[in-house]
Each structure stands twice: as C-alpha cells, then as structure tokens.
Amino acid sequence: MKRIKRSDAMEYEFDHRHVPKLTVSQGESFVVETEDAGSGLIRSSDVAQHLDGLPTRKFDPPKGNPIGGPIYVEGVERGDVLEVEIESIDVDDQGFTTLRPGVGPLGDSKKWDSLTGPFVHIIKHLPGPSGTMRDGTGIFNEQVTWDLQPMIGTIGVAPDREVETSAVGQGPWGGNLDVRDVKEGTRVYMNCYHEGGLLYVGDVHASQGDTEFYGTADETRAELKLKCNVIKNKKLPFVRLEKEDSIISLYSYRPLENAVESAIISLMDWMVTEYGVSERDAYMHTSINPEFRVHVYQMVRLGRLQYTAGAEIPKRYLVPS
Image (cartoon, rainbow, N blue to C red):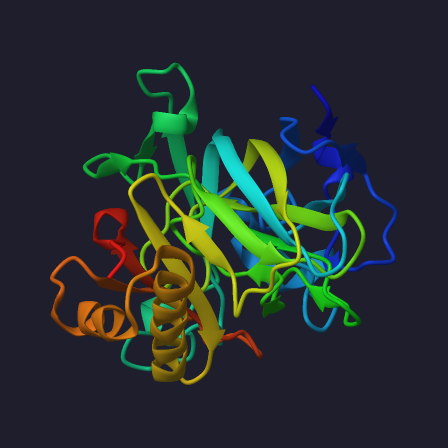
C-alpha cells in the first residue's frame, strides 16, 4: 500500500507549488504517517520550560500542525469536489497537551495564575480490544481515564491562489478546523482548485473536548488510512461531512454566531438541493427537531484563527417533501 512516511509528512503550508508526495487512483487506499502538532519536539513534561525556545516557535505564525502531502488524486480537476473517506486512525502510545504563557483565554489570568504555564502534560495511551489505539484508552492521571476518540485536526486541499499555513489557515478548501467528527468512518467533502486536488492531512488528536478551549488537545502521532473519490463539477459553500447516520455542514468565521448561522443555512441548502426536502421543512427542522444539533468544534483565540461550527441532522429526516 502506498504511504507517506512520517519524516516526509512535515509540511507547514497548504501550497499548490509543492511537488506531490504521493499519487493515488480514485478508490485506492493509502497511508499517511503523521507527526504530532508539536513537530515531535514535545515528548516529555521536561520540555515545558523550553516551549517558547523550540525552533518551530521562531516564525510568525509559528510552525505547528505539520501535514503530509500534497497527495495527487488522479481524475480530479479544478471545479470538482474531493471526497476523502477516513478508513482508520491509529494513534501513538502517548500524546501531550500544553499551557503557554499568554496563550488561551486564561493564559495571562491573575485569578487563575496556575494556568498561565508553561506546562506540559503527557497523556499515555493504552490499546483497546482491537489491540490498537483506534479504540484505546487515554490515561489522564491515576484516577481518571477515558476512551480515545481519534480525529484529524487539520485536513484540506491546496487553496486557489493563496498559501495558507497549517496552523491558522481555514476556508472552503479545509484547513485547521479541529472538528471532532473528522474521524474513522467519516467522509469529508472539499472544493478543489487544482488538478489532482492536492490533499494534505495532519494534526491528529487522540481526544479533544468541544471548542479545544485553550488551544491544544491530546496531540499525537498517528497512522491514517484514507481513500479518495471525486464528485465532478460541483461547488460547496464550505466543508461538509457525512457520517453513517447523519450529515454535518461546517463553517469557520468570527464572531461565533456568524459561523453557527452560516453552518445552519448551508445545511438547509444541502437538505433542499440534494435530498429534496422542501425549503420550509428544512427551516422548521432547524428550530423544532430535537435531534438537530449545532456543534462548536473550535473556539480558540489564536491569531486570525476563525471559530468552527457544525450543523448536523440525522439522515432519517432527509425525506423529500
């Protein structure tokens, strides 16, 4: 099976000028070995006092979330939509989270001065019933554990004309979205602007809470198994997700209420144009259906990073009307 080795998955920009690391056919499974968001430099709590001196921090914005790619998908052209199916996410035996002085909502708090950092916490991972970390356990401390829920934090294709960083870049092409539902079994849909699509992936989290409040989750290395297909001559308002039993429309913007509203309207458009739900029924679902959900996936005050929201509805309600 074709793969990108971890040592080759160290790009920090979504850039159409990069030479493809891999060429794959539609429907062909391939593997990307990803490095953690700290570029492999944070492997113990002893690093805490040196966080701001790491070589990746000497840039503006700092180099974070290394990504593997670009991956050239045969048959993809400008004006198409790329479908990426996440077949598996197998994370490393540990991850980390950090607190940095001045970073996050409490990074300069006097009241919460114990949270201003610098601080590194290592989360150990234990294999689950499958013998892998795909269904493993995260060890927060001696008293507290939880089931790992591996997800891809940064996924996207090369934008049209811009060069965007893997740390703060976001758009209809993807980017650093930190969406918990970009997980095993999910299909991710993104607009394409270049021949081959030019897909990049990285920044895997073994677990993450909604909003990723202070800016780092359980950051970890991983091995991803993916496959891609193309939807010809289609344009989306923003990135879309399809799970086994539901669909989710994403949107990134500030303020948060604008992101939420745009995600909901985009979901309505999806329901109407592709599932035949009437405009009025789609509108009513968003206000009275108890299984309609709005997720605040990412709400991190970091540079120009936008807030990412998602509007979700189960497929059983996608009935033509």
